[in-house]
Length: 297
Image 1: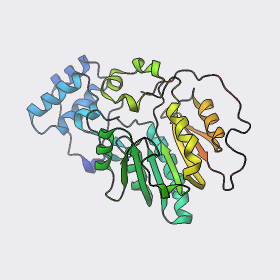
Image 2 (image 1 turned 180 degrees about the vertical axis):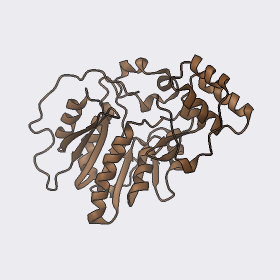
Image 3 (image 1 turned 30 degrees about the horizontal axis):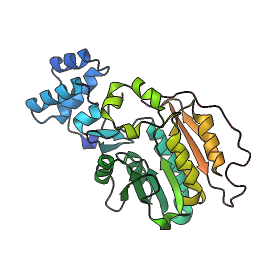
Image 4 (image 1 turned 120 degrees about the vertical axis):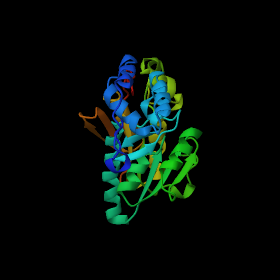
């Protein structure tokens, strides 16, 4: 697990951590005990609050749930208890989406952006901070929707529901950038995740079905109907699952390409709707065996 680091302007000067706090965190298995102790000390308003926060962390709660926020592309993102914690690797997904949205603004002036499976709204917040865009966000989890509404600007529209279902019908054929950080852990691999994830994050944000790609396939299958000509859909996946993610894009009539970042251990597949749609979905797509299990910790 990564330790969130807030922008300097957003955090008061860290308070020196008592050695006993570091010792307690280290004994609980916190690899970055010193860093976590400093962060907890800076977030606590009183010694009693610090003690309570350390108790929660030692009990296994994600650090982000204890302090109430995560750092994501220089933004402080509120993360409520029980909400999926934005991963550092997903900053790469956000960066790719930002680049494509900027290109859209060069011609349209304002990009239409949709963040499916938005969770806390971290990806959408990063996009809105970097690009002039009309932002729509969707999640099926009510707790995530409440959190996203806190993190996104008042002019963003945040919906509760299943993927495309709650989106306004007039968005069909108009979306420039559609980003979906959908769950991609195979069901049988959930038990192998770190306790912080499997015990404290919603199952719906982790479980991608038998091969991990159920939600991704649903996203890509309908994407062409919602994207503008030349529009893009982006999903995060694992390196091992990439061939099957690419296949699902091709079957949906999208032109896929794969980008990756070794430093963040991140893989993103980008599908583009052709400016002039050609053969129907699935033409020429080869059938592949089931992908190997992949973890998303």
